[in-house]
Length: 202
Image 1 (spheres, rainbow, N blue to C red):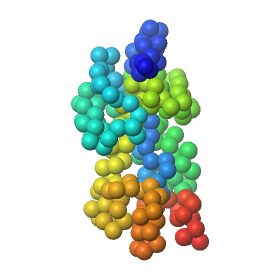
Image 2: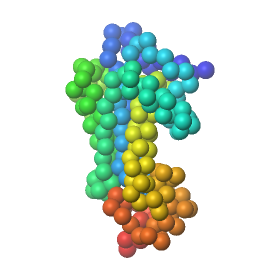
Image 3: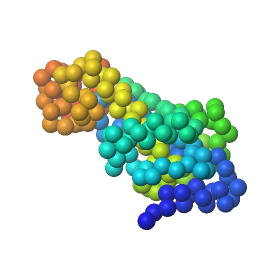
Image 4: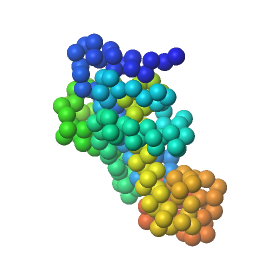
C-alpha cells in the first residue's frame, strides 16, 4: 500500500510547511486547451480513495473536486489550443502548471512544489515525480481539479456544438470524434499541429 503522504511528510519533517502539488489534464486531445492545477492541502486533509483522476469514475471525481475546492488552496492554469500549436504541448503543459502555481502564490507563500513528472524552473524548489498522481496526495488532488475543470469546459463546448460529441470524448481522437470532424469540418479550438488535424489542414 503506497503512502500518498510520503513525499509531503518528508518535507514537513524538514520544516517545509506549504507544499503544492501540480498536474495537468488534456495533453492528448485534438481539441481544446491543456489545463493544469496546483493544490496545497491542509496537513489534516483526509479523502479516502483519492488517487490519479484517470482511475476515478466521473461521479467520484466530481465529488472529490467539490471537497478539494472547499478544503484546500488551489490555482488553475489554462493554455489554449492556439498556443499549444505555437509552443508545443510539452511547453504548454509546463506553462499551464507555472500559471497554476502563480495563482496559488497569490494566496499563500508557497515553499515547495511536487509535480507530476514535469521539471519546472521557478524560484522555489520543484520535485518532479514519475507517476506522481499515484504517489502524492497533493498531486492526486491537482489531477482531479485539472481534469474536472477541463471536462466542464468540454461540456460547455458540447452545448454549442453537440454534433461533435465533446461531452463523450472530451476532445480525444475517438472513432466517433474523427467521423464528426470529417462530416462537419473544423471549428475554432482544434490543435492544428496534431496528427489527424494536421492531415486535414493539408
